[in-house]
Image (cartoon, rainbow, N blue to C red):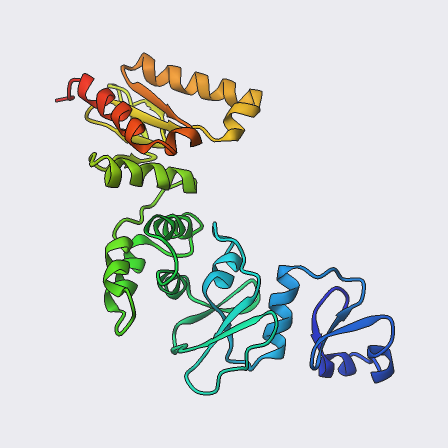
Length: 288
């Protein structure tokens, strides 16, 4: 029952573990009344579960800790961030960053722990993240099935008395479905925000004149028949993936499409990248 798990003192005693055993070499105390097997390594998951056992039952993961627990593209912070309802806030201790202001309905269970809902987590992150990173996180939430673009818009629109809520409402409307990676989001935002280009379709299923499927590029300007493929490192270092990408692009070119391939280096030069895409669009006659 206790093997490998973080547990409370009461649970250990109920399982037949004596007080002397808890103080011996088999277990170690993490917080007051919270223990784990001595050989269990300390990692982010252990720290999270231990703190939630040590804190009041109303506490929930918050902010970047919540985002990392959802396995979003956010680095786990060096401290565990939690939030509790208005009132008494747990004192700040080494490894813990407590907040207050948790409202009813803003909590769910994920991987067995209390955590702010995806929508509330996204709104909380809007206080600390850049515009691009907030859209990246929103796209990743949708990709993982945690929320939808419409639910993020609704959450932002109905939020009241929150700092930077007007900004959050605007950015929620940039979150899209079908995005496969953070770099795809960054590429899309560079084209629209930096380059002033129209918003491309995201991972559209393309067909030929007979309705047959010919490809699913990362981004596409369908009227101009311009497809944009983001090539991450895995595309270049894996021979099988590289061959697959070449064959994929040849199918599109055989059907009259222009394929623009983009790398991480291109994202560091947004003006040049946007010029490349704009030239590709301008050279193509629009489909009637």
